[in-house]
Length: 122
Image 1 (tube, rainbow, N blue to C red):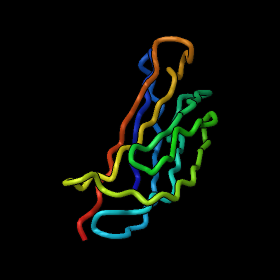
Image 2 (image 1 turned 90 degrees about the vertical axis):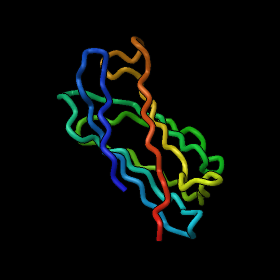
Image 3 (image 1 turned 30 degrees about the vertical axis):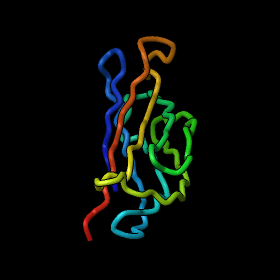
Image 4 (image 1 turned 45 degrees about the vertical axis):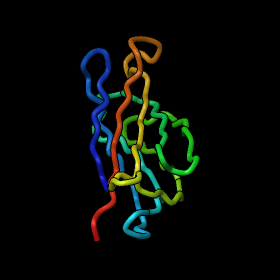
Protein backbone atom coordinates (compact mmCIF):
# COMPACT_ATOMS: atom_id res chain seq x y z
CA UNK A 1 0.00 0.00 0.00
CA UNK A 2 1.37 3.43 -0.93
CA UNK A 3 0.41 6.65 0.87
CA UNK A 4 1.67 10.12 0.07
CA UNK A 5 2.26 12.56 2.94
CA UNK A 6 3.61 16.13 2.81
CA UNK A 7 5.54 17.28 5.88
CA UNK A 8 5.27 21.08 6.19
CA UNK A 9 7.90 23.20 7.90
CA UNK A 10 7.39 26.47 9.77
CA UNK A 11 8.07 28.43 6.54
CA UNK A 12 5.35 26.60 4.59
CA UNK A 13 7.77 24.52 2.51
CA UNK A 14 6.61 21.01 1.71
CA UNK A 15 8.71 17.87 2.17
CA UNK A 16 6.70 15.15 0.38
CA UNK A 17 7.31 11.53 1.33
CA UNK A 18 5.98 8.27 -0.03
CA UNK A 19 5.12 5.68 2.63
CA UNK A 20 4.98 2.10 1.33
CA UNK A 21 3.82 -0.78 3.50
CA UNK A 22 3.76 -4.44 2.56
CA UNK A 23 1.21 -6.74 4.13
CA UNK A 24 0.50 -10.45 4.11
CA UNK A 25 -3.21 -11.24 4.48
CA UNK A 26 -3.73 -13.93 7.15
CA UNK A 27 -7.48 -14.06 7.85
CA UNK A 28 -10.58 -11.82 7.79
CA UNK A 29 -9.38 -10.35 11.11
CA UNK A 30 -5.57 -10.29 10.80
CA UNK A 31 -2.67 -9.48 8.52
CA UNK A 32 1.09 -9.43 8.90
CA UNK A 33 2.75 -6.04 8.54
CA UNK A 34 6.01 -6.99 6.83
CA UNK A 35 7.83 -3.79 5.88
CA UNK A 36 7.56 0.00 5.95
CA UNK A 37 9.59 2.17 3.55
CA UNK A 38 9.72 5.97 3.82
CA UNK A 39 11.01 7.55 0.59
CA UNK A 40 11.74 11.17 -0.23
CA UNK A 41 9.41 12.32 -3.00
CA UNK A 42 10.57 15.78 -4.16
CA UNK A 43 12.18 17.65 -1.22
CA UNK A 44 13.33 21.25 -1.56
CA UNK A 45 16.99 21.34 -2.56
CA UNK A 46 19.18 20.40 0.41
CA UNK A 47 16.15 19.55 2.56
CA UNK A 48 16.08 16.66 5.02
CA UNK A 49 13.72 15.21 7.60
CA UNK A 50 14.31 12.78 10.45
CA UNK A 51 11.15 10.71 10.91
CA UNK A 52 10.42 8.54 13.95
CA UNK A 53 7.83 5.80 13.39
CA UNK A 54 5.55 3.81 15.61
CA UNK A 55 2.64 1.54 14.79
CA UNK A 56 -0.24 1.27 17.22
CA UNK A 57 -1.46 -2.30 17.60
CA UNK A 58 1.66 -4.01 16.14
CA UNK A 59 2.47 -6.28 19.08
CA UNK A 60 5.20 -4.26 20.75
CA UNK A 61 6.83 -2.90 17.61
CA UNK A 62 7.91 0.28 19.35
CA UNK A 63 9.11 3.62 18.15
CA UNK A 64 11.83 3.40 15.51
CA UNK A 65 14.26 6.31 15.40
CA UNK A 66 14.83 7.19 11.78
CA UNK A 67 18.03 8.30 10.14
CA UNK A 68 17.88 11.51 8.15
CA UNK A 69 16.07 11.25 4.84
CA UNK A 70 17.44 13.76 2.35
CA UNK A 71 17.01 14.31 -1.38
CA UNK A 72 16.88 10.89 -3.05
CA UNK A 73 17.03 8.89 0.21
CA UNK A 74 14.78 6.32 1.84
CA UNK A 75 14.55 4.40 5.13
CA UNK A 76 13.30 0.83 5.32
CA UNK A 77 12.02 -1.01 8.40
CA UNK A 78 11.37 -4.73 8.77
CA UNK A 79 8.36 -5.14 11.07
CA UNK A 80 7.17 -8.74 10.63
CA UNK A 81 4.32 -8.50 13.14
CA UNK A 82 0.86 -10.03 12.83
CA UNK A 83 -1.78 -7.42 13.54
CA UNK A 84 -5.39 -8.14 14.48
CA UNK A 85 -8.26 -5.77 13.86
CA UNK A 86 -9.64 -3.75 16.75
CA UNK A 87 -12.73 -5.48 18.12
CA UNK A 88 -15.84 -4.75 16.06
CA UNK A 89 -13.94 -2.84 13.33
CA UNK A 90 -11.85 -3.43 10.21
CA UNK A 91 -9.04 -1.20 11.57
CA UNK A 92 -5.64 -2.91 11.81
CA UNK A 93 -3.94 0.07 13.41
CA UNK A 94 -2.27 3.41 12.79
CA UNK A 95 1.22 4.28 11.65
CA UNK A 96 2.46 7.43 13.38
CA UNK A 97 5.16 9.47 11.67
CA UNK A 98 6.71 12.18 13.84
CA UNK A 99 9.38 14.58 12.66
CA UNK A 100 10.91 17.80 13.97
CA UNK A 101 10.25 21.00 12.02
CA UNK A 102 12.41 20.37 8.89
CA UNK A 103 13.63 23.97 8.57
CA UNK A 104 14.62 24.31 12.24
CA UNK A 105 14.61 21.06 14.25
CA UNK A 106 14.99 22.93 17.56
CA UNK A 107 12.12 25.33 16.95
CA UNK A 108 8.43 25.57 16.31
CA UNK A 109 7.23 22.12 17.29
CA UNK A 110 7.21 18.68 15.77
CA UNK A 111 4.90 17.48 13.03
CA UNK A 112 2.92 14.30 13.50
CA UNK A 113 1.04 12.42 10.79
CA UNK A 114 -1.20 9.38 11.17
CA UNK A 115 -2.03 6.80 8.51
CA UNK A 116 -4.80 4.35 9.41
CA UNK A 117 -4.86 0.86 7.87
CA UNK A 118 -7.96 -1.28 7.48
CA UNK A 119 -8.22 -4.89 6.43
CA UNK A 120 -9.79 -5.41 3.01
CA UNK A 121 -12.84 -7.55 2.68
CA UNK A 122 -12.02 -10.82 0.89
